Length: 175
Image (cartoon, rainbow, N blue to C red):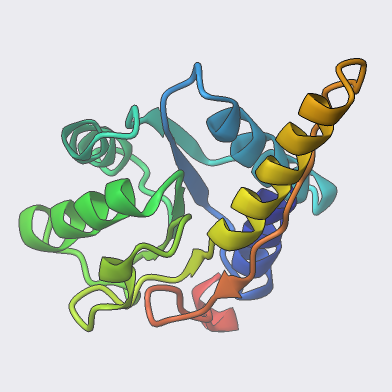
């Protein structure tokens, strides 16, 4: 949830006001947590979510979601629930809808997959701290093996916001 809040705060701090969200598969706890944090960050600033679509964590789903989202009253920024979908959204916006990133719309993803850093994308994103996640999972499993009465626990591991060139600072004259 913290990463979703961090993304909302960053988009708001850079002057965005019409902010959209392209969700992953709604049954995934990661999707629900990211969106809950994102919405909480927007709500704390008194900003309503401008648009929402579902991409189902697929590239085709993300492409269709982008088309729907940008057909009417497009956002000035969009948070996409994972980087693979964000790359598809960026391609759709640029090559199909003729928009420029970040001049026309800012895009931010989640995961920091290798392609996010490619010059063709330069996607701002949240890095998943995979090594820390694995270490924590192993520690929990070992504790449960050693002590059968060990209660399951939930651990949140915050990842850093990786700022690249897909998010711009909105000038006051544009708001």
